[in-house]
Length: 340
Ligand SMILES: [Zn+2]
Ligand SMILES: [Zn+2]
Image (cartoon, rainbow, N blue to C red; front, side, top):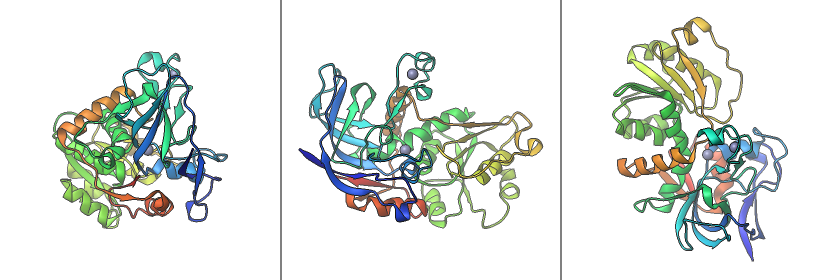
């Protein structure tokens, strides 16, 4: 049997290096694995980084996509706690080793031997996908497939970023860049009782931020970020924009003792820090890597209880190349999700 997928032929800029839409053999499962018939898969910026070679140049014959919701069709012999016909989610962390220093200390997101969905393993730009049954997630019933898919990376990474800011209750958090992950994270932060300041160059993104309840929005096109934000009482910041300038601005505007958490898997360009204005006063700069299964379970519950939902548009598998181009040009408001 064959399945339709969008596959990386070689790495290169998306404008002239399209994913190939083709039929390939249905994959086989091993003892701990399951086969899912995919119903929805989100398009994430990490997919774009993989395709363009930002995370390694020799990626080929890989199906991207790691925000997957699907129905269990087949199960390996050792699979437990899931049944045929059940709806589950698969995300970026395909599996971790379970025995390294990170895995045994509750930090499987930093595992030395981890595998990734849609990168070292085939992912969700496809009618079917194989997943490790120990790294799948139950999807709360109130979510449609296409609403749940973006929560599995865009949402979960934002949640972990938020946790890493270690905010005091009611404090103000600034968000730099307002794409898929940020628009979910802004909802979470607001609903948990914080104030949100959003910085973006994109007018449509700023409008969406306002619609989602942001307390203050600002575009660097209007003037200097520091002078306009310094009186906003910003304790912490999360930088979603994959470039150095927002990171440097965020460090300047946060209060003494604050944290800047960078959620991107890849930053284009160098970060040049001025110690006195950007790091002194016990300011902290840190990055986020993936999530642990515990994070994801917490987040899916929270997202359901707080009513967090993506602003999304569904597309067909055949439209994924143009969706990736829109993502690159910041033309997507919210997220785009492949619906099967
Ligand atoms: Zn490990
Ligand atoms: Zn992602």
